[in-house]
Length: 118
Image 1 (cartoon, rainbow, N blue to C red):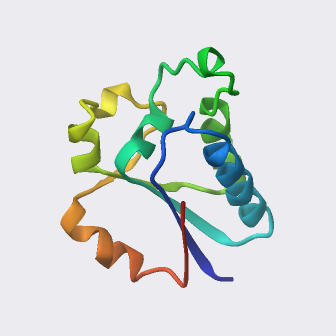
Image 2: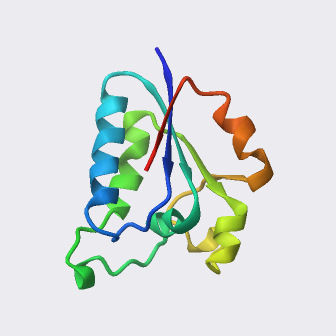
Image 3: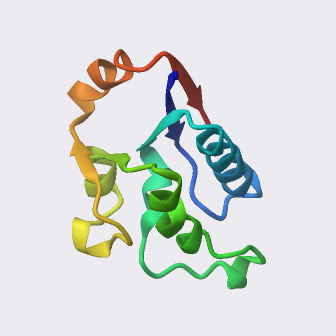
């Protein structure tokens, strides 16, 4: 079993990109691979409690994130500085996540055999 890290950088409703990436993540996990997520930059909005997906013509991604646990995806990391830069706190998020400081991201990445960045 390989260890996969998916690095998300885009907001949930920035085209179909986020939805497609979540499909890849779930497919990878369905094949019994160890999958973790790291949310950076605008991707922190993907975990925001109140999204207005319908307003932008997209489906709500919050339900998918809540289903990650079913796929044994429990290691979700979010960069502290990205949260701060976007005016968000842990209370604004759908899920409980592991916070990581920017200076520690490279060390986290070294723990994985396969890294997908999107």
